[in-house]
Image (cartoon, rainbow, N blue to C red):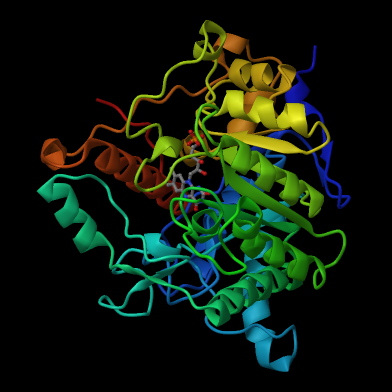
Length: 420
Ligand SMILES: Cc1cc2nc3c(=O)[nH]c(=O)nc-3n(C[C@H](O)[C@H](O)[C@H](O)COP(=O)(O)O)c2cc1C
């Protein structure tokens, strides 16, 4: 019997994703000059991999504030595909074409890291403050070593003025417009993992009392404005999705997150990807700060990290197209999540860095379930890790290792799953 993974999914904007397997966003760490050109070879490989959709690694909306020193980014305003911007549009068109040349729709993930921009990432200078909704510094722990690491990695954030907030909204809208003009099928706003949109949504990092803070609704205003202004400028058929962090059911912020999700649905998003974690608590990489209690035996048998939360969102918004990312390694795990009604789309990160054509294996009916998967162990931490915060170093080791594998297959070299 054909698996539900090969069913197409139609987004509200009309975009059809030919199957349910989505290559999750992974920063490739290859764009030294912040142009997308060096990324094309990796995406040419993914474009033949049988994916239903391809999410690019994060594209930063402001070259002064990057997630890593090698992120692709916009440098200044984008005013449309006029003569002045011809070369810029051509560059991004080459990238969109590399992703979509075999018919797989690609969506560019757009992002601003806010307070999570590393000291060395971005043209603002290594002593300049990061920007954030409020001046709440990152804390990776309370020991002197953790405080020292935090101070070396990040400068203190500065609270954005209202005019600056409006300016960053415009940067998101400009970036979305450029992605549409370049031929991408849509964008995904990075509203997860503790980046700027997430910082606005969260009451821990947004202490504002103006129109962008104070209540869950006002904290959502930043992202809702981005969506509204983007919708007004891109074609109707252009998809706008968002990656969002799950909230713990027992946490005080659970209902607040639900309120914000309802507002995003009302704003007309095409899909929502569920993930979780921040740099302070890297759950998305399987390195939570504190062990997460397993909710039930059935959940323990599943692969996905945020399955229970996705099911709650599904219960409240049955028509919202949901993608769930984090932990999927086998066909059986992906099928179980879909058949259980937790999601419509399965986002796959690390396996896609080892095997760019992973869907061809999962969708091949002649391959038995036991063989249709790519189990991955944790990347062995470097020798000095025992002196450093375990979860931060663990998550960093995962990201660095898998980015290196992406760079390898882009150059036509073999990739290697982590081994002891
Ligand atoms: C090398 C690497 C880079 C990543 N970069 C991004 C990114 O740019 N944007 C994002 O939303 N998530 C990023 N992630 C997180 C993945 O999208 C995904 O949420 C996470 O890896 C969990 O999925 P997995 O267990 O299938 O790997 C990255 C992960 C890795 C391994």
